[in-house]
Length: 316
Image (tube, rainbow, N blue to C red; front, side, top):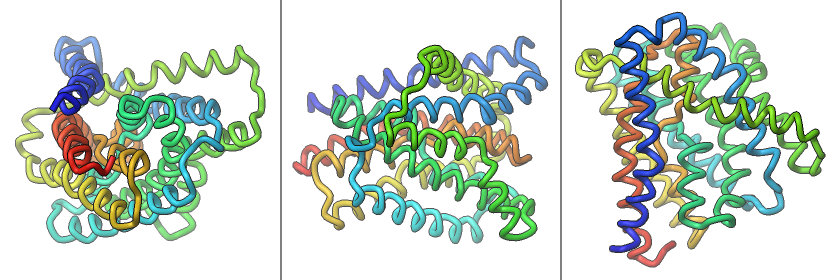
């Protein structure tokens, strides 16, 4: 029980500041300090500059030799694609209007790996957990961005064929940031201290700005109107994905820290980056922000319960 309470206390420390920034965004929008123009410019800045820089800094500082095993990476990739396909099928029957299907699917399968996921792993396993999770985050982020582009393009009818989808993937700023960082990490390429420190400043401002913009977009009347789609995405992200992901990992033979890292990553809330991508592509940004808020709150309970259960069973 003490382990459960410790993780619960940690989860509050991780998710509490996120909700504080979302709430601040709501307040600043209501008093007029954040405008629609600020939200548009800030979201674009996060998507094009902030998030790619943050991913580059995190991966460039990691030694690939100390990261996730090939088996973990393969399982993560295969399981994520399987869950994405399942959610695409479900959404095609139950999510209306059609243009919101991509928002719901992305909110349900795309996790906040780089912030909350890494924080969970660091708390549970300290430096070994962070080292194991870092490459996993980089590889899975590439995949979920590709799947996110595909699912949003399909539901918004913005794709005119595979070539356009591939072009969108190839020019996605988040993917470019990760691809640039991988050789730096793999070959331990030294970068100028001033460049890394400057990039660190940009990385540090990214999440607060993204959450302020997301909070400013929150519309609680819309939340009531779109409760069904928000709840469906929340159930997929907080219950279905962690359950399927963890049971599959257990059946595949993962135990100990590997199983724990896989469960923690799958249990983290919907990524703040999903809001920026939805807004940049002209989707329902309000629905995306509501899903982030709901899953961030819900993950506090579901992740803690999952860790408590797996530890009680002696699996992690």
